[in-house]
Figure (cartoon, rainbow, N blue to C red):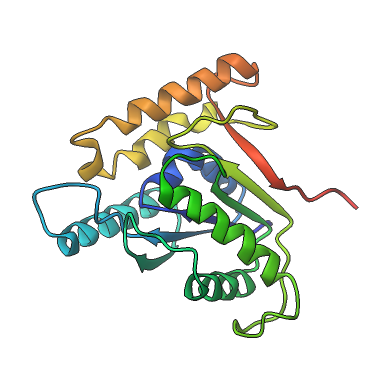
Length: 222
């Protein structure tokens, strides 16, 4: 059994970027935790940010329940203004030491959306700090994440050193993503995700539909 942790800048990013891989982990019996950096309250017009945050958190819970994910953490940072700061680092180190994941999924470093780029920086630094005994502001024993994989959402990767065949899980991935109804009303993110995964499958030759990742850290067999 391997424990999986996913960092999502906004609800639905986890399904677009690595949903098929998450479903494979769930099928193998690996427990999954999702940490939402923001609640996505800037992702729409016509209602207050507070109301939209409630909607998007409910959609995230619905999608997670559909997929078999029970552990969700909402950090409540302001959507569009995610900060690389002390309070976030302290919170993330505490989460890493408490959850003790073997695999961490985060957005890749070149994502164009600023919240995605900051999410990457925060988790890379938090992972470094969580692994040593010197960061006493966060409780828990040191924990070093063995594997950190960086997924693509808004900005496709230019190199794809890690490829995961998700062909058998593509329909389930899209079904989970479509639980985020508030986001699909204006932009068909499900079609974009399917197209990217199909493109990756064709160009890598690893499967009909594939998810690709940059490798931040990769655990090697002893």
